[in-house]
Image (tube, rainbow, N blue to C red; front, side, top):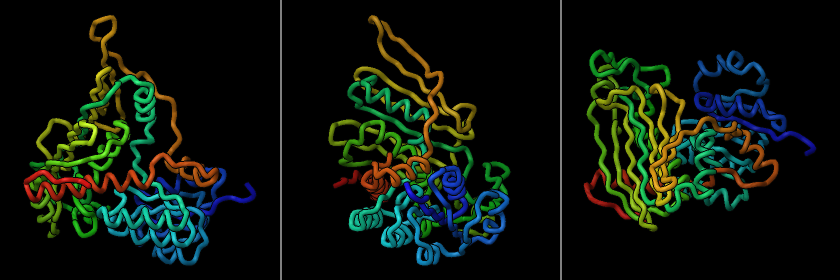
Length: 363
């Protein structure tokens, strides 16, 4: 390779991880970043002292003025489609944060643009890149579960609405957190915990279940707490704070999905995924209400029930490293845009079903 790939990052919130990942890659030169928030731009050199590129306020200006090979889009959801399409049309490959878009129509436009421009489009479903998740996928591909016919994937919080500080049930002040309130403004986010948390658990389950095609969903969505907390700060809360769904696939398998920012549960954070196959079962759960995990495997050995636990998973490359490598070597990225579109179709159907109170078909 004669020269380094030129990269730019739009959004320094979640995009801070993208920037750090690119700065560590020997084949990348991060030449520009963009963020509308002055506080994030002011802290750029503190948080990323190795960065010495240009700083923009608007991502669109960065795309227009810089000749980039890679662009990361890590901004509120309602900006994903416009910025991604512009970056692809400029000749850049794009790594977009989850969810892919606000809805299926936007996601399909992003996919069509990627194909038309011959550029790679990756979606940062970060839980696929967890070392344990990669180990679980290896076990499944080697036949440990056999035919997977049922799954349940969950991410529930006791009181964790992005953009609202100190919002527990009894003493919540409703004060606005520094990250702002766009998460619970449907016009900017597209939805609440389903599209924020549930999208991670849904994609992970689909990937581990070998990406079956959904046929229908039956779902519910509820707002019981967020609107009250937001009102204390004079804010409007226009999304759900819990969503649940049953999803059926064309191979007959079923998947249950639960996602909540606020719920009367014991744990601060509760994350699980359970998969049942005709040869074995697998269960991943978070430890100490945090972001470390354990994986257990259940099967029959010599005619007797046998349980085992994963001791360690080998380190796995980050999404940023893998995306750079896929561009550099012209190889497939771990998350294809078609998979992002499938996730959006399911999310759209869940919201439709929750509103109608009836099953919704997915074409």
